[in-house]
Amino acid sequence: MSSELYSDGIGEITVTGTIVRIDLMSLSATERDASNNPVPVFRQRIVMPVDAFANAVDLMQKALNGLVEAGAVRRVGDVPAVEAQKGQPVSNASPNFN
Image (cartoon, rainbow, N blue to C red):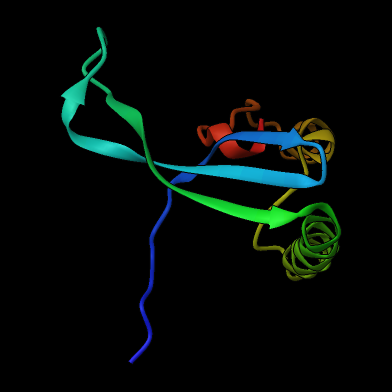
């Protein structure tokens, strides 16, 4: 059996010498901000050497390119041109892509 971890995003990436720390966050089920939106809270940390981080970034870039080509996501720079063609307002609710 394998263990899975869900994350709403990355809160912070810290590089100290040859070590990279990636803080994963998720939206709190109980804590809310002034606008009644869930507050992002620290959940877990990934710690890896810089060369492993560089390889992970390359792998994620390849995955992102595949998603863009499939039309599943759009790059932020591409949104105004695409939305202007459709005549729709430009908006992206995800903090991960802004």
